[in-house]
Image 1 (tube, rainbow, N blue to C red):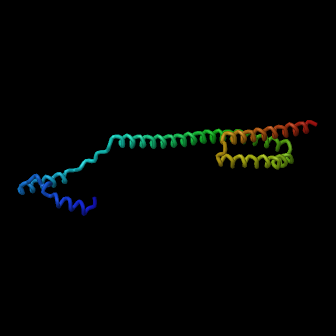
Image 2: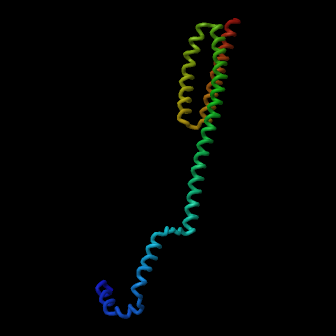
Image 3: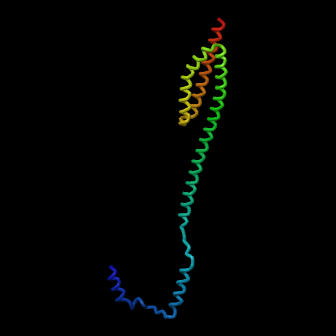
Length: 170
């Protein structure tokens, strides 16, 4: 039905719609009641399923944030442990290498310069390992490779000391 048809229908059948007669004195009281109901605070009713869904989403997001912060904290703790392990190894092996180089210097001053030139190659490899460590590429493997580098340096220095001592005995 179009609006014009509806309007025509109502105009034609108006008398059948107006079967109840309200006295004119009642309209002000009805109007007052309407005004009072509009002034009252309207409460919004939210269906319970939306409350549960919102709570579930909140818990899910909170859990995900907690998990991400825990993983980040755990990784940082591992990095601190790795870095402290590496610092201990650097100090320990650095002291041993320094004493071996000092011993070589006492045995033969010329050999010290040759040893330093040959150790530069190992130092370059060590610096590459340090840059890999900064890139965070498999920290544990890089740290073990760095420690192995120190051990190899010590073995080479010990062999040089043995050869210099054998040469002195001859």
